[in-house]
Image 1 (tube, one colour):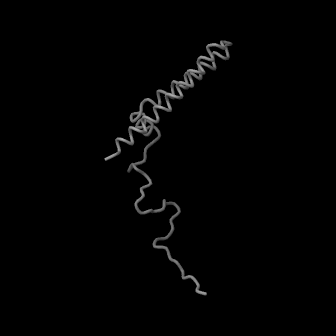
Image 2 (cartoon, rainbow, N blue to C red):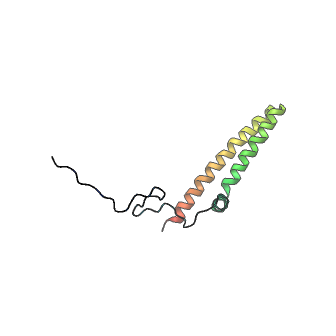
Image 3 (cartoon, rainbow, N blue to C red):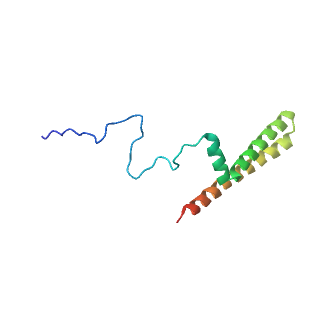
Length: 106
């Protein structure tokens, strides 16, 4: 039976650095972005998603307020409005995804 030889790595393992994989770049952007910069960039790329999120939050908040005040019909209407706003947000995400896919094609 043959004993396996020792395998020596090409470079020493450095746990503080990400692994180097040929043909793979861990970041598309050369500089790291702050949360604010990334939020602004994403909002400019697809402005309908934040609008849908704000509409969803507004409908939910007002619906809960109406529920608390005992206005059940208005509360039900706002919960249905919230569902419509969520649907709008999902459609906005899908349209933005399709647009970015078509834009990146050669």
